[in-house]
Amino acid sequence: MKNSAREFIVNKSNLLESRFKPLHVPTEAALQDGQVVLQVERFAFTSNNVTYAAFGTAMHYWNFFPTDEGWGNIPVWGFGDVLASKAEGVQVGERFYGYYPMATHLTVQATRVSPAGFVDGAEHRQAMHGLYNHYVRTSTDPGYTKESEDVQVLLRPLFITSFMIDDFLDDNQFFGAQTVLISSASSKTAYGLAFMLSLRKDKSCKIVGLTSPGNLEFVRNMSIYDEVISYEQVAELATDHAVVYVDMAGNGQLRSQLHHHFNDNMKYSCAVGGTHWEELSGASNLPGAKPTLFFAPAQIKKRMTDWGPNGVQSRLAEAWQAFMQPVMSAEKPWMHIIHGQGEAAVRQVYDDMLGGAARPDQGNVLTLLGAG
Image 1: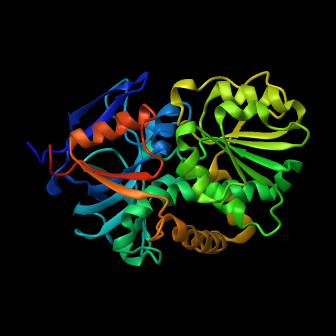
Image 2: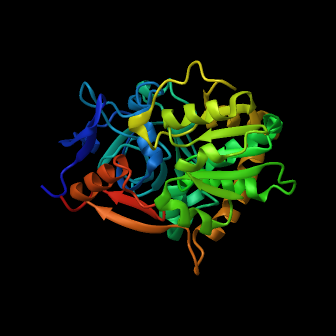
Image 3: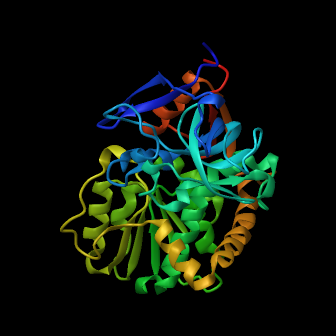
């Protein structure tokens, strides 16, 4: 049936294996108090979601939307509409932005309902960071417009990470480095970070983007990196100054090469993404700073204390508006949005992203509703 409820799941131990399975959606009469059924109307799929899958077990991403034993549902950012509700303050027909499964529906336990939205209080989600459990009511979200939904699901979660890495590096005086190296420079989180770094009046650090030969032109045309080179050229980088490495690729071989190249001048090294998911490897016994995993919510928590919650939101909103100008430029946009509907489209985008075949100038917005 074309409109049957279903979900897209992947084999946790072999991400190349995926399938669709029927999904049980409770009727309104069967709902418990506080439960809400959301129909997942659209969601984005980016390299960030490959990272969720690659780190699914280590970072507990599989815990958000449990499914069959040995299989996982990759979390995505999207919009959903309320189909049924037994939660006070959540009405049928309302629209919410948040963390969804790759599925047609999601049943949540709405708690802490407010004009801004609600938190999914389902027991299996409580161990995870609260940032991922909050659903934002579009009718009261000051940054929401219907026209910008696609851009929001594609870039807003990634840009928050970009914004917080930039802030974290500045908060730590760039660890004394003069250069920031960013791998997967064509990825959305990477160029969001480069954009933020490029805005700094002091330009305390040179921004160097590392990318594949096929993406060199695209990245250079953005004009936000001070220098863009291919992975094959990293051995040519000067080693007489301190550097910071922001690893968006998760490529263990590249990480090792850079650490050995810069040795003690590698002052900070963090892993953010895993777009080269098949090359993830250990990072022990490398010269220079020990590689760590950057976790944006930790810096957000710190800044909520430093700035107050409104301080974080206001700074982020201002940066987001500035970022949107080049991204959606009428003359030379950084991103073209591609819509896909149904199982075949979802599987194709997943396989392309996993295989590294996705184009950097495209953003995929998907739905499992409608076409089978």
